[in-house]
Structure formats: structure tokens, C-alpha cells
Length: 131
Image 1 (cartoon, helix red, strand yellow):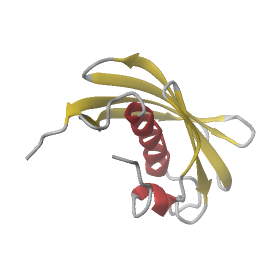
Image 2: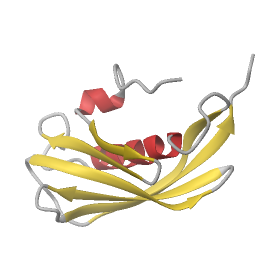
Image 3: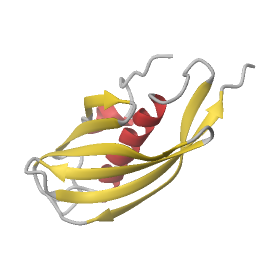
């Protein structure tokens, strides 16, 4: 199975892959009308979508996609700063890579490398069911 970003939340939000390796994934997301909340700032939900996307891709890079799949189990986020425009980067690094679960830390920063948000995401590793 190959990952496709077409017709996904990632494409809707303008999220792009900057770097992808099993130990680190970085995604980029614009801060614009697609990702704003009504007051004109980056929406916390868009930030969390960026974080979970980075963790999910990182998890995917650590499994056998022929026999396993990744599903988000839990995510939490602390929003540190607000931003109105530009781009933000979500970088996922592992805390734990196990056979059944993985835990990723995701830092979201702006173009000046200032911390916008910090998240921790737990993903489950699930065997593919052959029907």
C-alpha cells in the first residue's frame, strides 16, 4: 500500500511532506483561510490535524504496510503561541516504537522556529484483516 495525500484532509489543509524518515517526519502547513479560526488566527484543530498527520506518517514508516496499518488512539496538544499567517511545520519524533503501539512527540513551529504547539500522539499498530 502506498500513501496518497489526494482527496484527504491533508490536501484540503494544504499540508505537504518536507521530510520523511522512520525516526523523524516533518510536514508543512499554510496559515491561511483554510486553517484559520473565525478570529483570523491558526485554528487549534488544524494544528492538531498537522500533528496527528505527522505522527501517522511516521508510524507508517515503522511498520510492514503489507500486514499492518496505523490508527490514531489518542492525541493531546498544548498551544503555546498564536499565528495569523505564513507557514507552520510539524515535526514528529518517537518516544516509543513498539509492536502494538507507538508514541510520538510533535513540535509545531513557525518559519522562525518559534514553538507554536506541542503534542503527543499515540498510534496503534493493527494487523490488516483479510476478508
